[in-house]
Figure 1 (cartoon, helix red, strand yellow):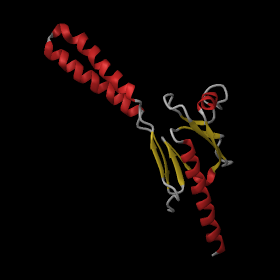
Figure 2: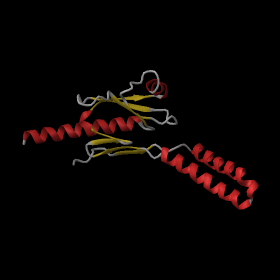
Figure 3: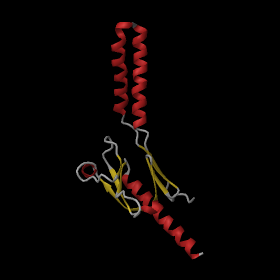
Figure 4: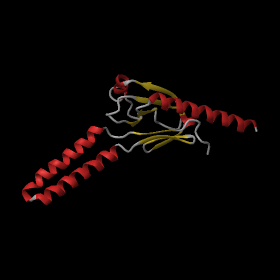
Length: 163
């Protein structure tokens, strides 16, 4: 397995406001349980906050990685050789591609709290997916890493063919 020329990894973490909302969920559980006493209210505060924090953490645990010659985005894994052109999208264009321009066959790893994205064409004729839509905070860096990995894979294939 060939290592990527420019390793890339990004975790799409939930915004800070979601952690505050998790605490507010705990407070609401505490208020619900307050008529039963102080101890149940404290248990509601701790339990409600923990449960809401687990939900926020799991939603924000998706990763985008370049590992070897593959792009791993959430649960999808696709070889870099099957990827075509990358299109960096600003917030307005990203919104358009996740709403009215979206293709139902596309793979979408989107997080509404991340305004920018990268759209990567899929060139594999066996794959019905036309493109990958990846919410990312660093679309330029991801596009450059994919391009560098693709050219490194092409150069490695050419060397193998010559041998």
